[in-house]
Length: 92
Image (cartoon, rainbow, N blue to C red; front, side, top):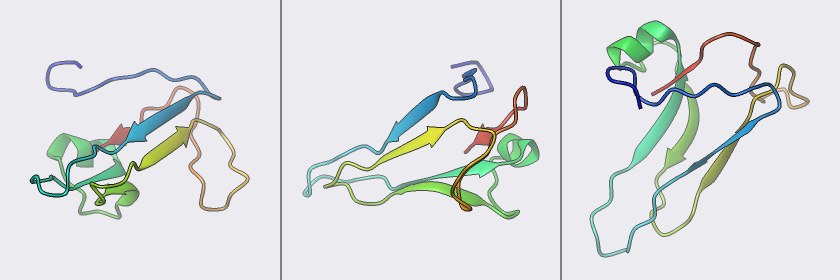
């Protein structure tokens, strides 16, 4: 983690990143999370107002939810994520 910048990683094309939602006991309080792929201005303002791209919604505390991001330049899935080499991306 970098001060004022959150977690910074430097993946290569072909790498994968697993995001695992936290689990909780049904009787315990639980915070619900949504992770968005946003532009730099949105990340700086901690905003998801302008056309947010929801990556994962953590809303089932009794279940393990795993979302895998594969850093690829071209996706065979028309809804798949595509990343360009040496470009910055931001998740809020």
